[in-house]
Image (tube, rainbow, N blue to C red):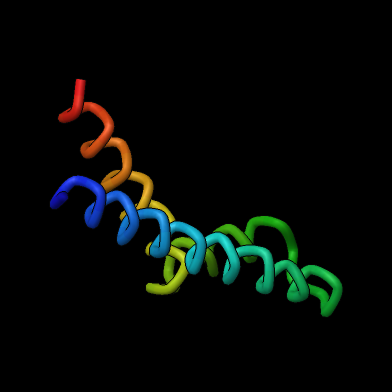
Length: 65
């Protein structure tokens, strides 16, 4: 039961993080360069949620094997 809950938490965190990454793509049309966009993604906490969520999902899946 705990592993299912951790999986769902990780899934939610990764969805939120990737949603913000997609939303921040609008900065490219405003005039940001691609490297400035990448720098923005790695400095924003809500974008880093995607990586944290993927790590949680990975750990839950590996633990279940």
